[in-house]
Image (cartoon, rainbow, N blue to C red):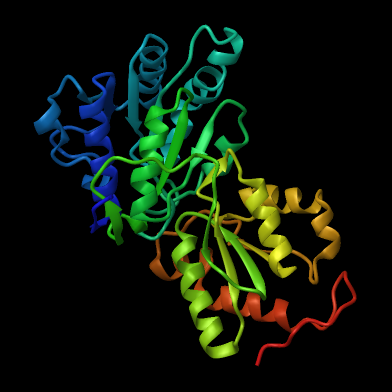
Length: 343
């Protein structure tokens, strides 16, 4: 039986890394200020004390350089975990990730694998402004050969990272920085959460909300308010991973309610929600939807430094509540059937 206790998201990440480094001597960490400083937001605190500077390696300020080194290290038998201080800085290592890590196994017909993980804090909410607050996950979900995970809970932060480290392919794990202090039940023992499997966070019959990452807690809070105040029940699906995408869970969610709202922090244009919407549109379930699909996403603007403007640039509670209410109050849709009005 797994023994659980409540710990923070960042403690769950730290624990996953420590347990995998104890289990497998091939696992090591590299990145800027990952040693004595403890990595971005202190997530790696204490790991250099246990494993030493040979396995928790402080690198020069060159994402291209140390990410490229990690690709080579992975190809020759180790399992590096790279920390990129902000997901915005992944752009500096784009060639190494997109043209090398993602493609080596395919180009060498399986003679090489690239079992590496890239962890990176993602998103807004900390006043870090336009160059440190973007959501970049959709860029990498677009690239064949890469896997992309976005944990929304401490449980998933540990389980998905553990699965990523054990995977023989390059995996990017995006950690919403505003969730680092959130707590949840996490088993002490090592465990994995399967990459490519979504989870249903809440059952409901009126509207299906498909989301991931930082927006999962927002969706659950909104669902509780809607049920309490409006009598509307939401079926909330956390994708957990973007690639592989759990398309079956997406379709089941659409079938469940006939109304689909896709929610993410990233900007609307080219965001991953468009891919989810396309998968639904290509499936026969689209013919049974009661209302058109709705996307509630970030505004197509750089993230401002101002807290007031930053909050306005990403989805908030009121926008989400009103979007769900409008969907339920629509009298008719594609099916021509009446939809239950909110009370």
